[in-house]
Image (tube, rainbow, N blue to C red; front, side, top):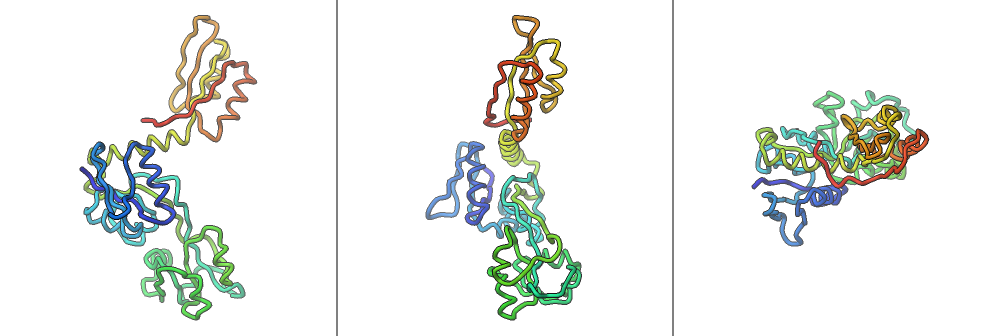
Length: 280
């Protein structure tokens, strides 16, 4: 039985549990404990703070876990990223007072910077001795209170910074998203590989649809060029040998355009199916 950490709160928690449940795991957070056992799948889930997960995984106390890439970078954890996940996107940006004359990020090296991610800030500026003010939250208020001259904070819309009288300077220092991590010694274990394949299969299913259609044999090559599939479409000759049936996976965002092209080409019986899961 392997141990897998899942965020217990924040914007990563619900998407992570939804994804695991969609992969067939019983990842239900108990109301009074921090762990639950999925006996059928041989996994014990631990519901932990997202920022603590890199430590537990990095030290091998937990075999694998889902958390943000920024949390792992901040903790300087040796945990290995196995798979990027399509949620938890964020960016770490520097912000200065609206009326400030600073024009480049490089100028901030000499300032007091308030942040919840000092390791990421020091890594970006490559200045280990720069003056940082560590705050666990409400970083944006630090400038107004005279604690810092600038901030580096996680930004979604920038509204909170603007309300605090700050403006974003330059490009993001760091971009993050959720990911599946594993301890270096466990990344190739059968249990972690099974977990990774299941999640990857669900992500593929979310990204693709299955298109099936009938096409005249003389138009088969042109139709297959529209629906090449992952490697090759599946082609079956119908009882009427002048026609073929074709099945192919198509990216979800392209399906309507693809179906229009097939219809314009002369295909018939064009059907669209959702994919529950996949192994590719």
